Image (cartoon, rainbow, N blue to C red):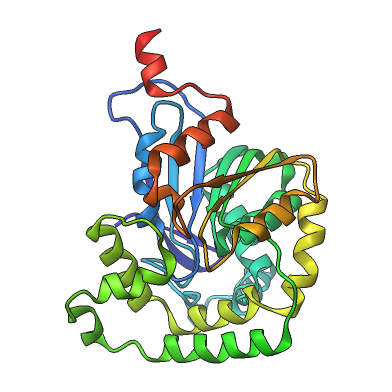
Amino acid sequence: MPSINVRGVEHYYEWVKEPSSSLIKPVMVFVHGWAGSARYWRSTANALLDQFDCLLYDMRGFGRSGGKPTIVQASESVVESESLQQESTAIKELTYELEEYAEDLAALLDELHLQRVYINAHSMGASVATLFFNRYPQRVERGILTCSGIFEYDEKAFAAFHKFGGYVVKFRPKWLGKIPFVDRMFMARFLHSPIPKSERQAFLQDFMEADYDAALGTIFTSVSKAQSEVMPGEFAKLTVPTLVISGEYDKIIPAEMGRQAAALNDKVEFAVIPNTAHFPMLEDAPAYLQRVREFLQIPTPELLHNS
């Protein structure tokens, strides 16, 4: 299993490329959402191989990535340099703030020697990507934010969400995944149109295996008063050409939230995929990919084949 050390934490990553191609292509990086992993981006990445080399990775604490820093203790006879001591201190102070995850992404690109990329991010990962776009605009060619938007702070609603979310994270017995049709029940709130059983099962597995602290910590940092105050400004100051894609019936991040975010900035386009909810890239892949290709100004494989 390929992994790379990012700010002291082992991160899973994988390349999706055309095996026989010798062409040097631009890189598209895919960022998953809360309690998910790179798994659910594979079909989208495979569909874009004619134009991109695709990089998928699991964020800290999710999927196959570690949740805690791995710090090797030096023996007493070894005196660490000042820079190493500073790095260890920084590693120990990692938090679950979305800004920290944006810095994780920057460090990952540094480790892989990637200077300028395209980014397609989903849900919580899209919030991370938005922060990244504004901190490192020179490193992003174009960005796609799938199921993203801005929300207004509601103290009672947020408190109820945090309470329910905390309960869901705590109650994850190993036998849950063995219950018939549990994957269908688990994904019901996220979907409007059906997706393959394998995709439902993979997401349930990711949720079951997510690091407790990361899963709980990001619930509080991604749905918070602070984020409701920060994100409108982040969308307003974007300089990276960005496409926000919403699912028409998304209950997690309603399409209207994406529309409001896009309206803050003329650099941001907005699109709704009909008859989909929180996973439009899986619920209607052809419609989703067509809109992505239009935004990126790249032809469909059929047009390439016929030209």
